[in-house]
Amino acid sequence: RAARERAVIDLLTDGHSAESLPLVATDPGADVAPHLGEELELWLREQRDEQVPIALDTPVVTGALDPDIVRRIAHAHVAEVRSCYRAGLTKDPELAGRVEIELSISATGSVTGSKVSETTLTDQFVGKCIAKAAKRWKFPKPSNGLAVRASLAHELGSDR
Image 1: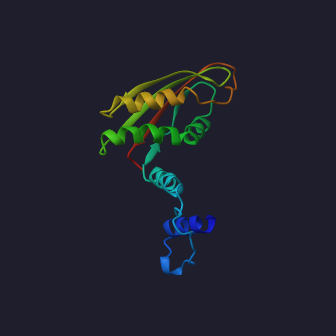
Image 2: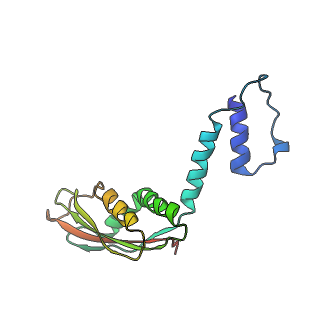
Image 3: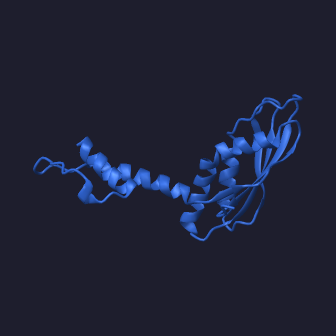
């Protein structure tokens, strides 16, 4: 069974011709791989993730936190942003634009406030979804022990 599954996944992911794959027998009347469809859907979803372009502008930071660190933290959470954007794309496949999120980061590095400060998207849900996700992000403690404000702008539908 594992060999059959591997053969199908190899075929779909590497573009091999079916003729080059070994013939693997199945038991008469047995399903080839009932859960393979779920694995294929997961793989296809991952491929689509790579096809949903998102660009992050340089953050504007007020306080003692390096903008590059803020950018790296935001970049580490791009899958969450992509998930929000994908939800918007299901309603409007042409959805694209800019979402700017304003973050309040405490002296401990926790996000105490997150809101959409500007957006060009017609779907307000996407920005709210991103702001909600950003509320869970964790940043390093600011070097001076004081709270920080950061503005993050995502260009959705742009891979510039």
